[in-house]
Length: 302
Image 1 (cartoon, rainbow, N blue to C red):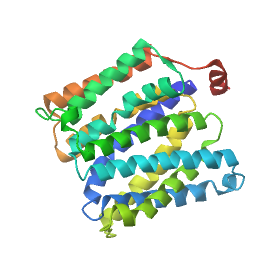
Image 2: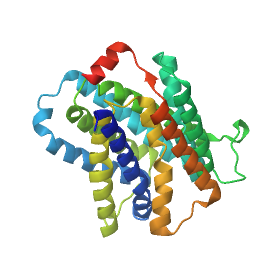
Image 3: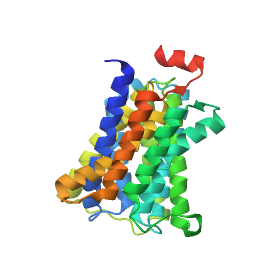
């Protein structure tokens, strides 16, 4: 199995985990406020990562430290804007607007890094975007510029932050080892979250019930430590646009696990949306290719 195929499959696995843990987080929020739960999850994950890679971190390159802080800050901004936006917008609109990072990644690459995205990858992105709309936005709740509120704008900022996080991590992973990048990324995100709680969530709370402890263990150890290590390694061999498309499968996996464990149904609209997302991913993976500069491609294969 080639490294590229392995990277794509591992990213798909990470996306499945993130989608599957949606029901775990949803249950945990009965005993904790969102920002406090995320801060606890990231703090636990950072402690585990530092313990696992302590020897390598003793020789942390300055460039990896800087890159890890940049990626961690972008991740924190994404979570912060998303959580704050949910105070003013619906969960369905938040899910769709967050998913706009799928189309923002190729746009940002084209604007800031002058990357050419061919028609197959672009077609896959547009199909996934349409699928996200059908999956996340209920019938009769259309989106228009006139309907955008403060929460929607915050969630759009979240999508921009996550798009830049995918791109910056992908570029940084070409130059620095994931054992240096990921612990700094998660620790930076955790630090920003802890510092922002008094401002962004004045009534933040957490009750350490057995359910919370279980949820923290799953989301920190599997959803954060394992999955972000996978992402940092896999993005060495995966174009950012393909990564964003694979991440678009998260609401599909969330819907499937909710159906299996909670009995929630996607319905015809949601099923059609899931099919479009899958078609977009397959179109991009089987037919599409991001035209990377030769120097970066050689570095990627080397």
